[in-house]
Structure formats: C-alpha cells, structure tokens
Amino acid sequence: MILSFRFGKMVKEKEEKEFGNILVDSWKEYKRNFRLFFKTYIGLYIIPLAIVTIISTIMLINLFGSIPEFQQSLLTGKQITAKDMGSFSPEVVNSLLQYLGIALILSLGLVILNFILCLGIFYVASFNKGKMKSGEAIKGGLGYFWKTLGLLVLLIVFLIPLYILLIVPGLIFTVFWIFSVYILFIEKKGIWDSLKGSYHLVKGRWWKTFGYILLFGLIAIAISIMFSIPEWIIQFILTSVYDGNFPLLFGTLSTIGFFTKIAISMVVVPLGILFYKNMYLQWKEGKKK
Image 1: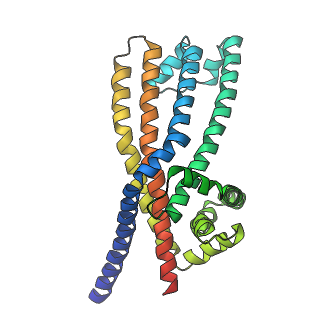
Image 2: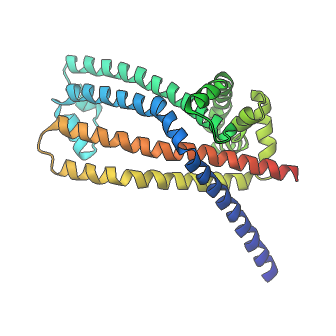
C-alpha cells in the first residue's frame, strides 16, 4: 500500500513537472518573441480594434445618450428587456437596426483579421528561429489560410452535432483533435491527415492531455481576471460618482475596456498557441520512444 502510494505520488509529481516545464518553456519563448508578437498585433488587432471601438462608442453615445433605459443598464448592469424596447420610438428602433448592421460588418472584419493574426502567431510558433519579422510572419501564416480555414470548418461540422447531441463525445474529440493545426503547419500534412495524426498522438494519453488543457485554461482565466480587476474597480468608481455626463462615462469605460482586451489577448493567445505547440512536440517525442 505504501509503495503504491509513493509510486502514485512520483507519477503525479512527474506529470506536474512536465506541465510546469512546458509552461515555463512556453513563457520563455513568449518573452523572446514579444516584440514580434507586439508588432504583428499592432496592424492586425490594436489599430483595427481601436477604429471599431471609436466608431462603436460614437454611434452608441449618439444613439443611446438620450435613452434613460440604456443609461440605467450601463450603471446597474440591468439588461434592457423587450418591454423597454417596446417604448422606443420608430426612429430609435431604425437607428438601432442600422447600428446592429454596421456592428455586424465591423465584427466580421475583426474576426477575419483575428484569424490572420492567429495564423501569423502559429507560423511564428512553428518556424521562428529568432530572426523572423512581422511581415514574414503574416505572409507565412497567410500561406496556410485556406487549409486552416478548411480544417476549422471541418472541425465545426464534426464537433457541433456531437456537442448538441451529447456534450461528452464533443469534448472527447475536441481533445483528440487539439494538435491538428500544428500537424497541418509543422508537418505540412493535409486536413484529414492532420486530424488523424492528432488522434493517434493523443490516443493512450487522453486524460493527461485533457488535464493539461484544463490546467492551462484555469491559468488563462486567472490572467484574464488579473487584467480585468482594474477595469472593474474603475467602472465601480465611475458609476458610483456618475453626474449625468453620459458621453464622458461611456467613452471612458470603452477606452478602459479597449486596453483590457488588448492586454488579455496579447498574453493569453500567443502563450496558449506556444503552450499547445510545445505540448504537441513533447507528445510527439514521447511517441517515438
């Protein structure tokens, strides 16, 4: 019994050390590539998000600045109900629909740019030897645009029905296919072969893979909360001393939210891509032994 307990403890410590090593290696790699990530973020995330934030803020201030229900929602967090919207004038409803249309177009543009940004980060994680520039990273990532999009579409087609029918099968195959994009990039395999390769790589260590994904997910949540705390504190203070200057309040909160989103994304996204890449490489090395 004692030997069994000690053996189990040794195995657990070994697994925790492996997770720690992967995380530390990923953090070191993140710091080495921070300037490259930052330059890539400027063109594909920070500037576009700033433009969208400014446009959205101005439109919302003009649209809702005179609507008490919206101001109350901002101050208290209370959702605007259908009953509240029923009291809006036809002009307000029409303006709201126009805003939603513009917001949809802007959001679609941001999604496309974010996709290209992630491709660039995947390219850096897969091939950077220390001298890569942001333009090279973006150009290299774009070379995988259609194959990665095809892989993403195929994953959605396979996984959504599994999650709708039963959550467990969807979760199982999400873990099995977690490394498919890295196989697509690093091994330059096709979409179907990337899915099969990821499946065989995870097979026999599903629980360990799931555990590492869960641990990193908790770390990502902790990072997000850490960066969000100052925003929550400032929002609480500003709403507590609100003096009726709605444009100033809304503009300030939008600006703070803008910088919070950038901070969270610039840490969690590249670090996550690097972590799963290093995890993939360790799993692949383990399969060879």
